[in-house]
Length: 253
Image (cartoon, rainbow, N blue to C red; front, side, top):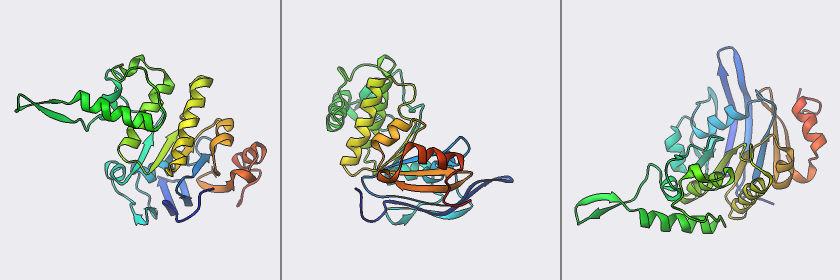
């Protein structure tokens, strides 16, 4: 079980949209190596919380700390540079490019042809991409394949590999097994466990309770913009989680 100083700490965060309170004094933390499942019905505040952590939104109140330093209000690119990677359902990959090009998307390595013509160093990028894929035990037959020809699970794997190559210290995953077949779901869950084993924590947003019960070390439930349950996996059952989601077992009312 993960122990120690929180890598991420959210303290008293509030977010408003006009007259709507999307987040109401939310406290939330993640320790190194944890897999924290963030659950709740639609509109519970999960996505808003993640966007406050990743820099998409700036909270009106409260502070987000990462590695002990406040990061509230920084831009999404600055927060990515800090080591927080968010993998959304659309993955933000370029389907017309190959695997290695996607790992280095926007950060391509160049070399000089004939000593003065800058060109993309495809061989070096493939070699580096292969190393990070091997580290995560990801097997893709050819890194020259365009992503459009890969399966959903393989695309998820490429998105995770890209995050890890660029030194992600915390990975946020939004419904990573949605629309995947069972074998591919198993692979993605295995990748989450691999990240955890390397002390890279994961925040997992999922509506698939089977996935949550399999990989989560802790379960946080949100309802109406508040955290209503914070349970170690050993203390959680599907029934108790559902009760918190629908409001039958909240910590507060």
